[in-house]
Length: 219
Image (cartoon, rainbow, N blue to C red; front, side, top):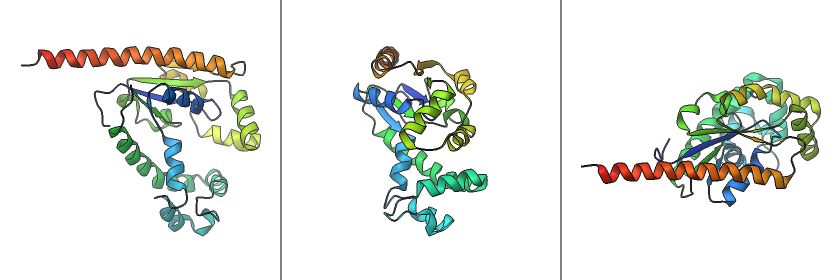
């Protein structure tokens, strides 16, 4: 990972946890946010770099009329056939890693935030980050939120959740937790996120001060 001296936060949480809203707050306040889901959408949009490899691997049925990846069709296929999901990941994950590294090199924010839904599952992120933050809520709240915004059935949502780390597994690796349960409104979530942002700014400033001291004291 580039920017070895930059303070880096990994932001994760299950589907429907609210991590995208948290990431939006952090970006507004000056952090550089690199969201793997956003990158995946870029790669699978019309003309995206992943479209032709996906078409070659899965056929024209994987591509929607507008030239983007047919996300609904691929979701059905991926959950019906774990092998198909792995093939799709084999196409997308290296591309996402490359884009992530490119965007990190260009980062100019107060600190870096990597939004990675499968951060825990990948096993590759812990030693690349200064902090892991989990946006947390109950599984029932996740299901209710995703149903409300997407129209997916409870069965489909539960299948998506089944391939993600459990709530307990995410919390076990967390340095920081932002609670976004069913009782949390936007104002309260913003306040909790702001408190975390201020803490990370202090940590980032302490790192910068130490780095400057090392430079000034070097022969």
